[in-house]
Image (cartoon, rainbow, N blue to C red):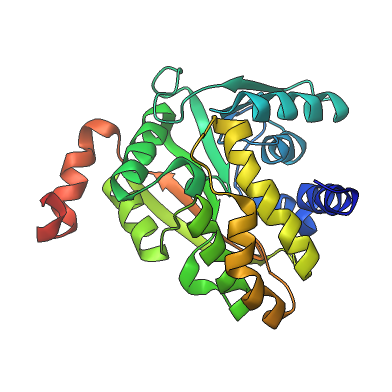
Length: 275
């Protein structure tokens, strides 16, 4: 990677660390109480967990991620933040190593598409979130819903994400999965991040994303970034750039049924729910 690309990626990462204050705005919408325990699933760089620590006055925050390199980065950010309440551990989101009812709240920020490849896996994740939540606990889910993209550039960014590695779920799919796993949605809101890469920045971003798959997850069959860039370059240049993660969809849900009652919730949803 050339110096120009390295500089672009560093700039993008610095901007991504802030994301126009979207993490902060979302956490401020969570009706948490001081002294609670919170979990951040797919914590990545750890910024969402650290924002919880800053805004919710919790007793503790735990961030988990399956990628060791991400956990190490989150720990470094925690040291830079002088965190005393947040801890980061490597863990599978589908097999959370915590007792049932261990947390007052669970959050996840732009990680759903990395954790879940299809609808059954999203339901598995939500079931595990339900398990570790106390009755009435909060689930703060921030993701991207493709039908809510506002510009061709945003839609192209989602297409590139899908092409490289990620699947996205619609609002309806997420709402149905939450209802099936014992949650009631209290709020859905949208937050613009303002991320807009010029064509050269988009090129460096594609290289970063393709290489990240091997670095974080050990994928050997990752896409060649030059081939991906060659495929999408004409459309990126025609649009003048790429709006990556430009709009975040936030779901605030509350646990209204424990796992042992999920089957009853599913039965009451619709005749198709048991198919």
